[in-house]
Length: 516
Image 1 (tube, helix red, strand yellow):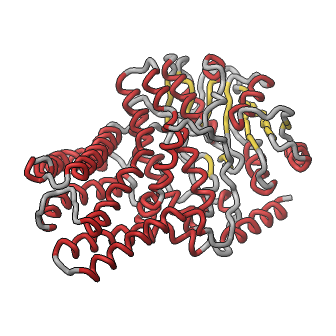
Image 2 (spheres, rainbow, N blue to C red):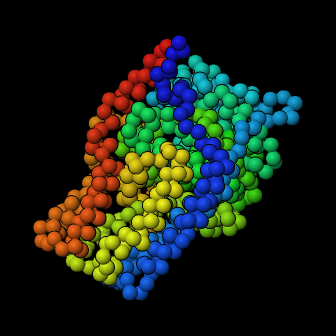
Image 3 (spheres, rainbow, N blue to C red):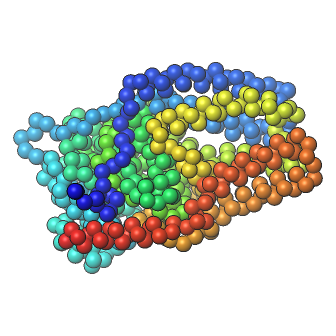
């Protein structure tokens, strides 16, 4: 019997990013057609002048609902145009092409990095040079590179974080193709055979492939984070490719060196250097491709502090890029696709608005809608909202779960904080997401979520102690629904990762010991 690898990154992926097929696309288009009259039914009711309760609260409600409608319409528009490319090797060349594989490292453990370096050395379909780019300047990394036959590069001046590290290696190397791998992403041997052929057109800048969290099945938080990633790297990424608007996601990507040089390398002043590089490349006429095949397996955040740090960096970087997107000389379709991706990180504001309404109603009596029964509201809103949720689950092909939805809702404050930091021009720094989770509880990482739960519970109890009229009961119920979702989202921080993270680390160490 074949032994099962202990390191989850060495196991075969259990998920595919490829399109489920023509029947799926037809189902999506039919549901989109159904969603339009349901949205009109709800908004025609909502926007009737007689619905206005407290004017300011009503304006907030309408703004939040219109924003979410725009996000939903953008989601449907994106996914309805999906393209599912097949693996494609580079053909017609007289000899195998040269490829430089860059693996940037900062302070990650050697047992996380070594499987990546070892697997990169085994890539087929090209003459591969593997570069371990060590911004930590550690002797153990130098020894690892020597042991695995990789080139070792350390910088004395570590400006520009990951982007600066890669740019430094670009100046030292020469291969016409460059692969960038995060140090925890172990590539499959056929990665180049699946991607290099898509770079045959002279104007193709890069080929992006999915990020896959191999530890999703052994860590609850990584599993919820992976569900969010699966939605993006499935239906959304295929749709963006159909719109010729796929952007670089920082790892598991193959570049044409000429494109990188034309763009001046990775932008070193951005928290999302991959996103801004993509804008610059598309602005200069370069194209991109997405191959929905898992050709590298990595590690998702295993504790809440790591997840919060990752999401905050993504939110600040993307929101801070809105200006660059608006200024860029891009076709309208590409500009809209980039703006959809950036504006996603404003959804936390809508959640904050929705949570505030039952609290304000219970404490002050003010409400956004004029007195009308909850049954009227639900009759118009519920079909529209339920179909929207169902379509998200459908697009996720079963990978998008309630835990992912709850984690997103509980992260509302990350979006709020990030957008305020961008507006106030607060300086930010690039922080690497830890590849090993802490095992203890992390209540500090979810303090804003805990505060929201406390306020909602207190408001509901206060309202119910004062009166049991239908309005109070309805708003107390809405408050407790928010509490249920928030509690599910912050639960991993309160339970702690348990022994999972430590066990995973022990398994990686044992796998390396057996392989050596």
